[in-house]
Length: 243
Image (cartoon, rainbow, N blue to C red):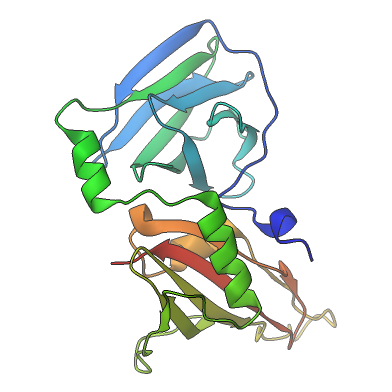
């Protein structure tokens, strides 16, 4: 399986779309949820000033997403024309922003997230060292093949940590990044009234929500098999910044 084709969550390969005419400017603030009205019918462009959107977390089916890899921006449209929905964005420079998007009967306005001017760049460089896409891909490939890359060591596991439907089986830790390998098994109970065997469907966004990690530290999730039949299992690989 080609790693580049399965590296879904963090690296979006986008379509180039025309920009909208108007723009709504908001200041990035990780401590609050930014509430923004968006067009019901048309695509709304979301971009981060002097940065690039890297990850998008949200509930599958609540929106249609298009991406522009060249500019590092996204285009979003709601699927339910009346129901607000939430998104979390992370950027290449380590910023995180929670959004609540409210469908409105209006022309599309671009949402531009600008950077606060209080020495933020210096703070980000100190707390979130730059991580290249190649570094992340190489670490994921090493974890999948059972190798420990140079500069990484295997961290001890907390055997008494609470586990949900997944189990942490390995953690490789380096100075900047760490890779956590989880085992996920379909142990769903069969229905008494149906002969159908239950299927477990995995998605990157929902898996991210269940992880005991700070959202700003999460960089990538790789799920080789998204559908598990009863009794089947797979490994899920998570790359995050080292605490």
